[in-house]
Length: 182
Image 1: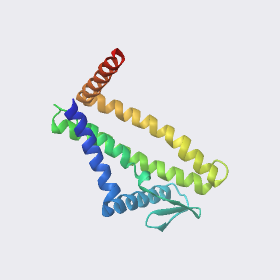
Image 2: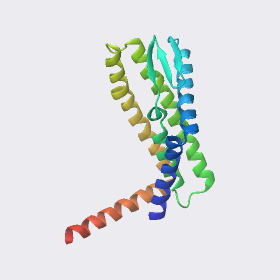
Image 3: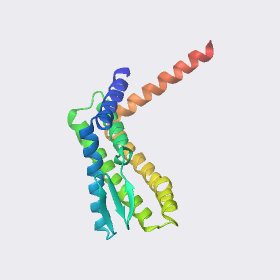
Image 4: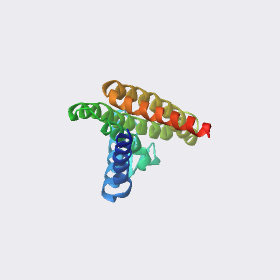
């Protein structure tokens, strides 16, 4: 159990660290998300333009894309969790990875496009109000729902992950009881 938990943390941390600290990967993922969000917004007919390598403007109002806008945190988390499924075949892990990580990435591009468009087109009041409502309420709720469904799928397809989580919870419960007994 500790080895699986350590593997999850190590793989997830390594994935995130590479994109956070390696300038080439950092720039690549941010510029790729920017380019793809511009493409999606344009496909919906919104007046979108690229104003910098990491910035898009909808209706002339610019939005800067930062690392947090790339979904790398969720991608790293799921990569770590999937890799920790001790006993699962590489083929099953790969299948679950391909079902979860690309879905997270695609939904994130939609999220970024929606937020930038809501901001630039003032869908919910002023541009700032629209950004706040779209980013902190609408897309957060959508992200939470999507991550819950993706998590459910991962747990159904890789029950070894559920076993690891159950083992960690049992260990914590046991340790908690031990501390109370003192």
